[in-house]
Amino acid sequence: DGGITQSPKYLFRKEGQNVTLSCEQNLNHDAMYWYRQDPGQGLRLIYYSQIVNDFQKGDIAEGYSVSREKKESFPLTVTSAQKNPTAFYLCASRDGLSYNEQFFGPGTRLTVL
Amino acid sequence: RKEVEQDPGPFNVPEGATVAFNCTYSNSASQSFFWYRQDCRKEPKLLMSVYSSGNEDGRFTAQLNRASQYISLLIRDSKLSDSATYLCVVSPLANYGGSQGNLIFGKGTKLSVKP
Image (cartoon, rainbow over all chains, first blue to last red; front, top):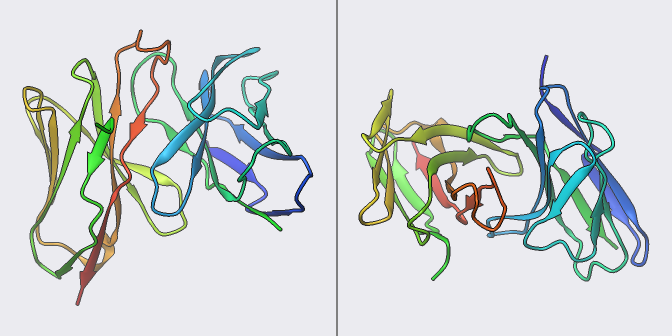
């Protein structure tokens, strides 16, 4: 089945530690995205990538880093510089040929202890 | 003015009711419009795209008014399974801040359908 996978589903981290969230897609989509969602809030864009080996900052990139070495993979690192990292993180992908829908992974719920 | 604004709700309705959600957007150059559905603690999923002529999918009808920068979603004969948060989503023009294909999400309107 084609889709997007994110792992882990739940992640606990101590303050001051970096952590990497995985996102993999087998939809052959060119574009991939990372969003953050806080309770009662809309999705906010962290980083996006239109093509392999290229990525752009979104609205709230501070304290985060990404890489896009393969078309299928777009991992997100939450660094210790991120002031309030506890949130629900969603990865999405989109067929680069159109403005069609973004497909979302199941999300990773990160809690900083 | 926020880029995409929605009434947060919650909307509490009985089964069988008709419910309407409204959404306004600030960027008049916006190009694509969508309604996504998000269940509690789950990822958003596309419910329907919104076209200028309006479109219908079963019990769901979406309307777009570009002049008023307004989008609506109507749910008829609501079911218990319609309980979720409905996200209004807008995609700006390709050259808007270099964000081709990026989506702007509203905060969502929560719907609770009761027996």
